Image (cartoon, rainbow, N blue to C red; front, side):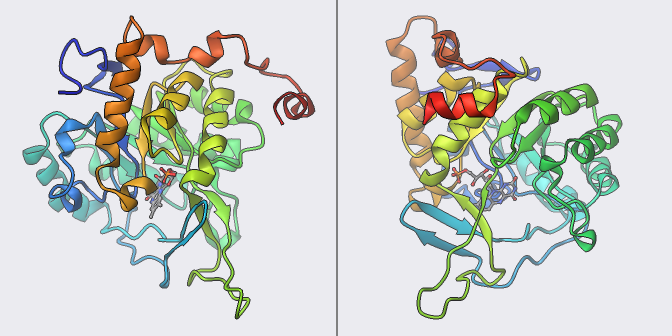
Length: 329
Ligand SMILES: Cc1cc2nc3c(=O)[nH]c(=O)nc-3n(C[C@H](O)[C@H](O)[C@H](O)COP(=O)(O)O)c2cc1C
């Protein structure tokens, strides 16, 4: 079945062999155990856990999720059991039960030192390959800071703080509303990341037309699902202009051809989030679609990755934003 040796779907990135390029996205598959009855995790390339913070977090007030025609809005508030509990109770399950899927632990925090502490606690554990650093958390909420991902200096301080704490791959997860990926990518690359995941959810708001109040308990939230797909594909395509490090594409993938767009834009792996809530078998369906697309093209996955960029359609890295708009809208 998909991902066997010689299937053309294998991919070695960050020194890790992924049996195929389809992963589940952070926050949409818990720590694996929660989904293991409905999804055969070892058929996938891997999955990313819920973001882990230093202390346990209960999350935001309900309702935390709502749907609209083009997607989903969530404000979960990074509910998770905290780094020490994850080390004690979640990592042993992953070590004992996951054989082939590659597990990436997502980490989050309110300060560079909190990220470093979380990684310091988890790194000695077993059952996972690397860390995805969720940079969409506000840089100290008490000060009303921007999310790290939108502040290249603050984001670089996070990576500089965590890099000495682990030899494992560090993948930085970026935000879709980044005005220009160049500065943040350059700073994070210099600070020692091994790759990038694009994109996290986009800030959004759904109002109740009767009351005029936000539907979510926390007010605004993050948009995911189909509304995010073209934004995510564009983000990967732009990011590929600035870095040769591996890229992971995520946002609105529900079918094989959605994943193909991300791969063609320059992603080497893809992740699936919201669509698995609607149908837990989405990842397997996407994988079959990618497998068909790879089989159609001699040369395996490598021929698909970056195809759109090789076709000469890409902008120059420093092309002014107006030019991009003129050419693409
Ligand atoms: C309910 C929910 C919870 C999420 N939790 C996290 C999280 O803990 N950490 C993170 O980096 N991203 C989180 N995300 C963002 C997803 O990993 C993904 O980047 C985003 O949803 C876009 O992909 P999708 O359109 O396939 O859902 C969450 C998304 C949803 C819908």
